[in-house]
Image (cartoon, rainbow, N blue to C red; front, side):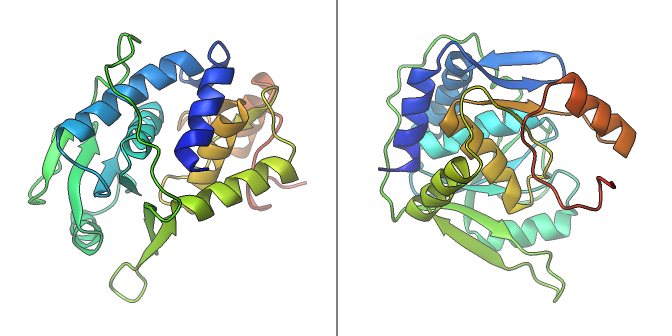
Amino acid sequence: MTIQQYLLKSFAQHSENIAIIHDGISLSYQELYASALKAAKFLSEKELEQASVALIYENKLQLIIALLGVIFSRNTFVPIPPKTPLTRIKQILQISNTRLILSDRESILDTGIDEFNSLKLICDFKLADYTPKNGEIDDLSHIYFTSGSTGEPKGIKGRNGSLLSFMLWMINKFEIDNHDRVLQIAGEGFSLFKREVLATLISGATLVIPTEADKSSFDSIAKFISANDITLFNTVPRPFPI
């Protein structure tokens, strides 16, 4: 089994459930799937498969849709935080051999890489004429980068099978199911981000994403957690003093 197969199974089983809530927008699993297929079809029409695709997004909902599109088209996602300096972006693109950038910016200036402005990835929820690709367990699923303290960021590669194994361990360990509401708080440049997103969606739970204002202080995030009935979140102890 691959990460694609588990996601597709969950999307089918939980189609009417709420998949994501962010900034006043709620998407069901069916609506999220329709939007992800739009991105996947676009990438396939670009004749990309097993290629590195950079994701540079301000909007987390758009980011997750694009990430799923990369997965369903059997490509490799390379998440890059939007505030990353251009010099470092160029280093990451070169090291990862990125073929395409998906972004909600107007332009990522002077990278030499094809860009696709994907502001409209939240579509009309009509399923695209596209069949997701299942992939193989040895496919390269993602590349994350270290902080680059030595002057050059170092890419850490992850495979489809190992990513899936960890997601299934996490779901089993924390007993995540379709009744849970999971807080998505990690930045996309950290590997925790993919765990929050994919473990939630595989289990049929609801991913709840705070805005930057919601995360601005301990009091504001605590209020957000309470108001949104969060049942699970993953963080280091420091932001939440006891």
